[in-house]
Amino acid sequence: MRRINDERADGKEVADGVYLADLAAGEQASMKHWRVEPGATLPVHRHDNEQIGYMIRGTLTAITEDEEITLRPGDSYLFTANELHGAENRGDEPAVGIGVLSPPRSDPDWKQS
Image (cartoon, helix red, strand yellow):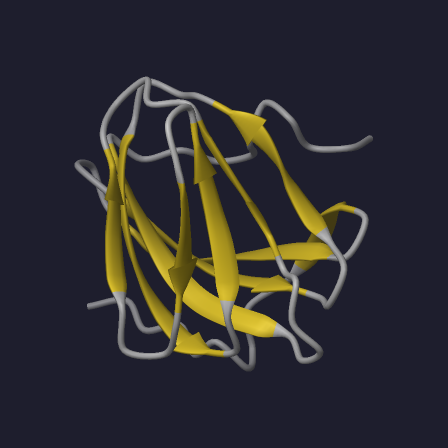
């Protein structure tokens, strides 16, 4: 068994005010801990991975090709493979959650260098 605590995960800033940390990963899926600071934007993108997630704290506006949906603590979400999506934190506190990608993914294509 492999155990990783979100407080000990190595979080990296992947876009201005957007942080990702690797949590547990296996052959079929990987889990990320994410934080989006107030006013920050997760760039709109798509990927081959199916992505499900869960909001822990704060609010986040998910942006898809057709709509904007406000996610709140306790909400879960799904982005199907190749679905265009991004997010904005329009609130005044960090938005925090976890995401699971299948198949596993390491760094996102839109990551800043």
